[in-house]
Image (cartoon, rainbow, N blue to C red; front, side):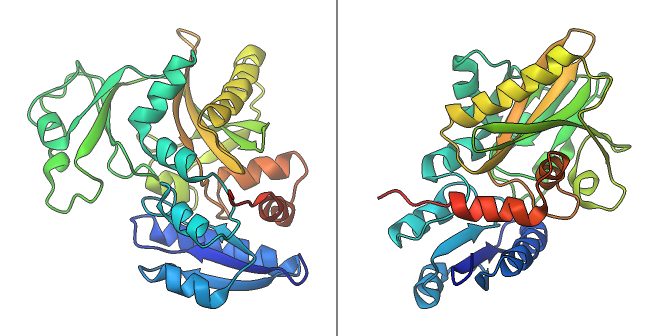
Length: 305
């Protein structure tokens, strides 16, 4: 990486800005350790002109959430002809739209939760499904605006009508899948490991993901049936390929031991790169340091011609 000018894109203006800043700083430090000439860019609406003035050889995209991982910043980078890390325009847009990604997965035979797309206002009027069910934004990340409606609850979540709601008007209402929370990172076309996430929270929410002690990660748990482990690894690679992803992704699953059902919840095309993030942890498990992972990401960067 010596002599290569790397623009690390971080921050932005989505709700995931704080996490992106941490991811970006970690990636920038790693790229510097690799010898790159690093420019850290806190992305704002003038990003096109900033990129022109910086003139990087590669953009390392450490943005999270809308605008950063939904195909829009990728489009800007392609117009500027700058090679960039992670997935391209179409794969990013599909993955961010959970309902469309589910349709692609289901058409290829992957098991996904039953559910429907609807307005958050309609979802707040009366139960759209028989409880228990899950309500979540169709196009947001880091578990913002996710609600589990338990059996016996009289009404849908009132917070769906919160005037400060920032996660779009479309919500995905899905059957609740009981069981264990699993995730698999894919690097290129290689699944790295299976991590079970255990938390004292109701589910793997924002605080469970990013607060110290919010969750415990068990990489390749010994009590997970071998067939489930292998299927999760296969299905993660398949999900990555079906959407046309590249670089590093992470696919989240629920496994219900009572029914032996392994369900694909969603795919993340820009997994967190924070000290508590799952993809770097899985890379370390197979012998790749954080610097090695960043080096691979930079070498994998591309821009369609």
